[in-house]
Amino acid sequence: MISTADNPVARLHAWITDLVPEAAIALLMRIGIAVPFFLAGRTKVDGLLTLKDSTFYLFAEEYRIPLLPSDMAAYAATWAEHGLPILIVLGLLTRPAAFGLLVMTVVIQLFVVPAGWPTHLLWLAPLIYLIARGPGAWSADRLLKLD
Image 1 (tube, one colour):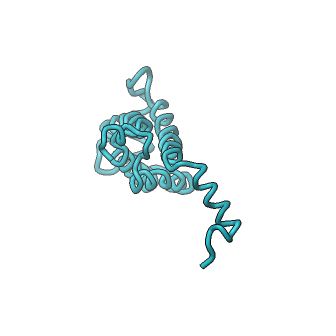
Image 2 (tube, helix red, strand yellow):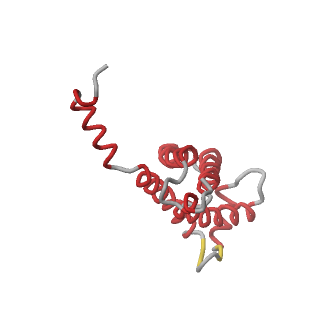
Image 3 (tube, helix red, strand yellow):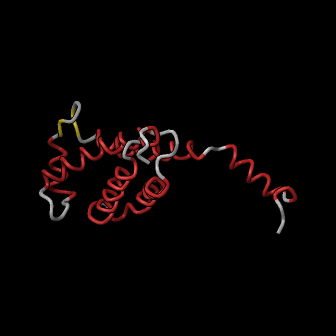
């Protein structure tokens, strides 16, 4: 076995690993996945959280989530697109919030935009990272000893 000291590539890899703390990676994952969901939620409302008529129309006529009345789906999705990203950015209840967005992503993939799988894969990667690894050291979860 070649030691790190004898292998310049391994030394470079170790240096890069030490240069980028895990907490920074987790924070970037949290912010990176929160932004598209939060911005999508903002398109569905006027003001703080008043759902637009167009939002109800989309859920009734285009999205058509099975087993859920369209009005209820509109509220649930809009509130989730606002609340879950905020929790994730704060690093508060990160794993359950990431799981909620993962479920939303699967529902979108299966019932709303089946052709959107390349984008949905990009969303799944940070969500699975956050579910598996948690929010990192720079998080409310860590501060409150929840993770």
